[in-house]
Picture 1 (spheres, one colour):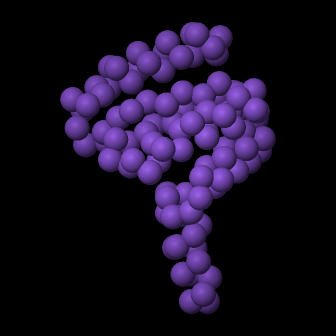
Picture 2 (cartoon, rainbow, N blue to C red):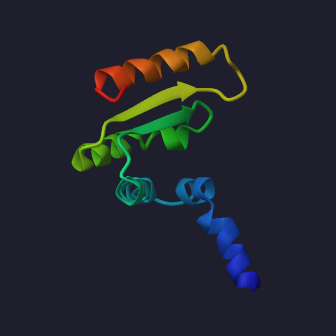
Length: 103
């Protein structure tokens, strides 16, 4: 019981699992989610404080290209709206959807 509880807390939570391992976790997760849920696009909200996640955006973009799924990343800060305002996020997502023919 303790083994599985520790595994879940150390390896199975998405943020911890992805941040503590190789970039293949991001790629594999995107492949699985795109296929399992037949999604139309991937939007990555890259928090400016997570530089490790920001380093994998190229890998995620390439994975989405291989899958034929549009990819967008938005740099933001969850606690500081002056970094990227809510209106900026809305505008970027709207432009992305229109540019990709999704909305």
